Image (cartoon, rainbow, N blue to C red):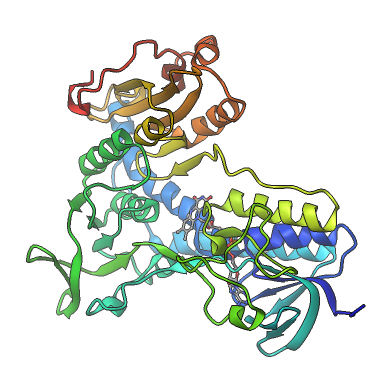
Length: 460
Ligand code: FAD
């Protein structure tokens, strides 16, 4: 039998790779992890965590406005970007350090450098030479995608750079309609930056429920974000005052920063997948089965590089399922059904299960329960902010197959709803749950009237 340097070599110390390496090492396996940037990956270094801190920072402007309605006088509040950046970076460094220690405590070795496959059992790491391994896990994540043919495209930043801007711009144009674009629009707007969100599609947040999409667009506009739909960049040019974004329809906007958040792609460049014989999907992701196995017998892949559901908890669960299956003799498949997600827009979204449109396709007849109302907290502010709650119920089984919330604390609410829905809760059981009063969430268990589709504008 061939002998190798390691039982497992993991490429990428992000959410999926770190979890897989730790769980595998706990079985007594000899494990190494290569990381070309910083341990923690996208989530910790330039994704979920720093993004959430930026959301927190930016929400204060709105809290201050609300506070005035309650009698508080808040004069002269100012925001200092460098102070915030320093605090954020300190915390990110602390978290990255915890990831390193967790790997070391589990007995996994860390190799700093870009790793590339030479064949199915051999990896070369920049500056460190080659290593061999019985099994290999690809957990290299994703990276921002840029439209290479667009003139001036290189003048734009992506989310990677948005976390490290030397100074806060006065004006920003953000291209994209996905959750990252929408979240950054809220962040910059909240921090006082004149914000324009440009999306080529007819509405933001493709894949989410249509009522949620329209509702959020209205709320973003109420908060002062300029939303340009059906519009895309044709060029970006440098100007005396910053950058000029030229758009389809022959109009243009000047800003200090242009940010592209128009999508992400699996990060497979320079990985040597061809040398190992690993096949990709037609979208360029590593093709895997339900157990995260690639077409090469001793190579697996988890997380964003497989482009299944690109979220941190999913990458973690896929990594864990891989390690349990392969190193703990416990075949484990992560179930990708009913994965709840949040959009930390302002106001935020929590969503689990199917949109109304997808549920109609899948089940045929569905009942809709929908409420749109002003959250109690805003009663004194005079602001016309609305929350939205929507349930989608399969008529045949009475099961709640979709739950969508837009409003304060929606991401916190949806985690709980997801438990019940994962267990297959029926609308009758949902309704038998007594409300918690006075909360926003109580509306979810008190929606009894079926909603007649008539367009959001007419909903009370
Ligand atoms: P990653 O975490 O990306 O880790 C991959 C690692 O591999 C990286 O550290 C990379 O440097 C390393 N690497 C790549 N190639 C090599 C190589 N050849 N050699 C050595 N190392 C290599 N998800 C949520 O659930 N909630 C959120 O709120 C959320 N917000 C996000 C906000 C932003 C701005 C972004 C960009 C993403 C966000 N995500 C969020 C998505 C989440 O970050 C990813 O789904 C998650 O990090 C995927 O984990 P992963 O292990 O697949 O890859």
